[in-house]
Length: 115
Image (cartoon, rainbow, N blue to C red; front, side):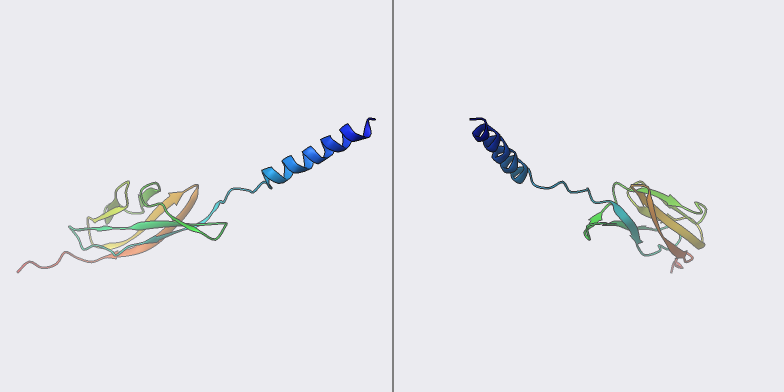
């Protein structure tokens, strides 16, 4: 009889499909949050970047993000997010991860007076 082999194949396909589970789509970056304290002129401060993912989780991306400063005359930023104040003023510090950019404003104060 040909019915038994067809039934066995159908059962095998069902078991294989159940064992493999369902396909899930990978999480994508929905936003990047940049945090840090503005350093005074002549000093540095470590900034951080955190990516929010579509599955509700977060990922620290400080060392893998691409960092930029809107005005290097006020502050520069290293590849790891270290911000160094060069001059007094306001600057935007940005981090980009997976083509999503987040930024924060930093008001750089004058250097502390030496005593």
